[in-house]
Image 1 (cartoon, rainbow, N blue to C red):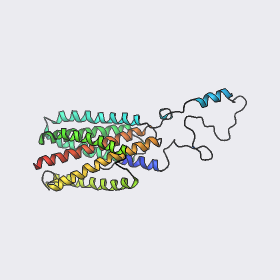
Image 2 (image 1 turned 30 degrees about the vertical axis):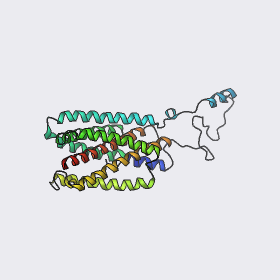
Image 3 (image 1 turned 135 degrees about the vertical axis):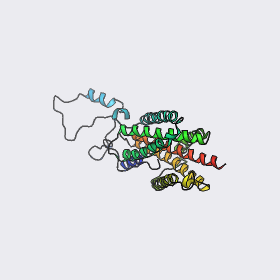
Image 4 (image 1 turned 90 degrees about the horizontal axis):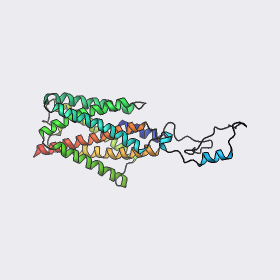
Length: 293
């Protein structure tokens, strides 16, 4: 997926001063201490409502409430949801691979259904005002259909290309995380804007190329044919790789900004979508290189 509206939405909300239900302030502009009771302004307890000094001491001696107690997002939440979504994608992809293998004639319909269906749902999820877990899981199923049909077809035409693409995807994922965490790969507001424009342009190019390929223009790879195809594929790998860095940064900002726990579904969905995008770019690149030999 070349453009990820999920992370754009989360970044907009964090830039506007926090998330709904978080970052509340006490009178005077000071933030309410996490894990401590907040007494409404103007409230004075009557004789029967007064707390003893001991009760007050016990209350303030309690450890501050953590993210799990306050309903805020944690990194564990994102990891768990990402693994759940990724598990659905892999399970459906494996089942599709087994089904399509002896029936190559159904590969293209399943391929197109998964590709365009997941693309449409990704925008529906990203621009929806609510976190819709059902749509997110449906998107995972469609991505699994797409991955399974594409992978078994490419592996039949170019033996071993799927294994190479998987290894390259995992290595790039780890490398991008280490590079981002160590500060070698920077994510700024300017780089996000540049990436967004480049990714949108690339997505339009992909759609045009699909149309050209179906109509028989440019050979089996459409516009991707020849040396130009290799350069364009390298560009796609670069964009998908940097998308991961943006994902890591967005997750970090959401956790630090106190986003609601429900956003873990959106963040997990976006991260898995970027990982799938990177795999597809590697699959296409290695297939073109193999066909050029």
